Image (tube, rainbow, N blue to C red; front, side):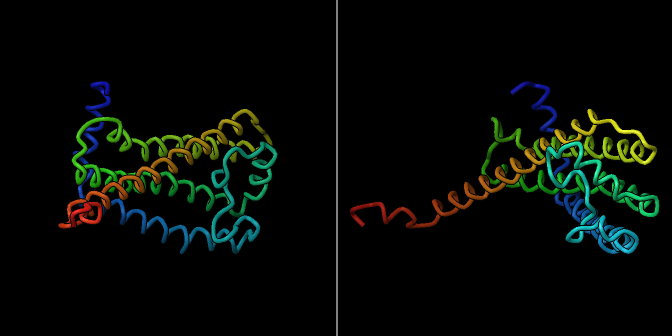
Length: 206
């Protein structure tokens, strides 16, 4: 593993404390309260078609949409809800980072329990933050596209780039989830192996 990457992971591990994870979890809770208790109800009251299953219809809920599909979403963002939409996107810059921190904390805790101190497994700590980088790219492009679209301008190339950013973000999130499951399974196997008599069933003399 390159020295620069090792240093980055080491610094990140130093910040993955229980206290910081608790703060991040609190941010997640507050973000959801702000969205579910204020932003979404106000948007839905003014433009019901802009809300689906309790969520604002956004370009980031489905990767690699066609440009035409994205423009149909921007059509929903009429002037009476545009301020709330932008506020929701502002929250969406905070929520992913807090979520990534909590996931990285759980990954780090499992890696320490498994005594993994080097190798490719440790690089998985960066996966949640890679998702954040692409999420931010997607959000910035969505805000730019929304503003330009309401002014009568369209940028199909930027819309396609936003779709790619969404796809890569979701891939990073899926990989983070699969890694978490894999580490949980390894932890469970390790605990079972430590139990007295766990392997007796495999011993023909028992």
